[in-house]
Image 1 (cartoon, helix red, strand yellow):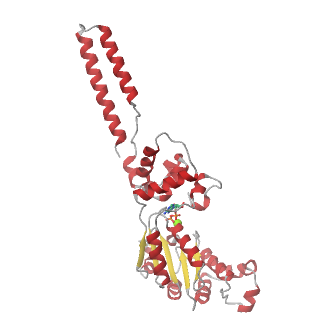
Image 2 (cartoon, protein in one colour):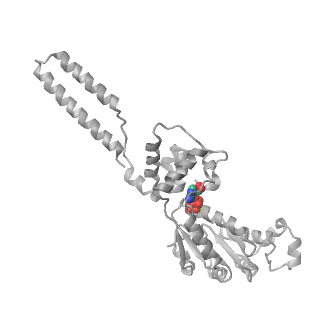
Length: 316
Ligand SMILES: Nc1ncnc2c1ncn2[C@@H]1O[C@H](COP(=O)(O)OP(=O)(O)O)[C@@H](O)[C@H]1O
Ligand SMILES: [Mg+2]
């Protein structure tokens, strides 16, 4: 499920603003970008690249000394460029090849948009580069792997003109290799640690409490299934039935876990059966040797099985 498609008012949406950890990565990004270094943010889908870039965008937008722009979800390459043009126009820095600065100032985006879309990708890209030139500009490009540019030459021009902060879950994408090779600084996002995962769960429970008979066991299960992937944690907590949709390519433990079943056997069942067996055995009389042997053997097997099953349920 893409985050932009979250049903409104859902529990999942309430979890959305909760963020744990990542202060180190954020500080690292902040420092690199303000130094003017291009940075590549990598990590599996759902690990938190977008949310981290959002935080960074908010923080840097407040600074008067930088111009920050971002490309979000866009899969269509040209649409990404138009998106950038719109943001630049809103800040009064967009330069269209056919209009003077003063004319552009009087134009609303509604009027300008068709004229921007009419440009070819190449000309549009050039106009963006011209608009960025000479400014302290930072360009955030999320989901870069989905961009699949038809031509990369002008991307090089972007790299020459602005500071690029690029996120991708596929840094080995051969189509983008030439570009990615120009970005030596990498910030790799890892899964949340065990304690961060528990903290995230606790904070989600605060926002939307729910009843579960054994909370600690439940939390261990979530940790075991998600291995610290924050999207998986939020999705699972919000809706258990999603379990089967979680992309197991990115969640290691689910693969080894498939087929594992739980047989809840409480001590009451064990003791109850034990008492019942004793009752039968005593009822038959001490002299009945067959009943004695069958009863005893049955009890031993049953006790052995229940203990094995209980141990299996507890195993991580
Ligand atoms: N550090 C975190 N703490 C809490 N939730 C997080 C964290 N990182 C990501 N999430 C949540 O996980 C989901 C996926 O995050 P996102 O940034 O879209 O991942 P990516 O862009 O890497 O695929 C979002 O719903 C986000 O709220
Ligand atoms: Mg993302």
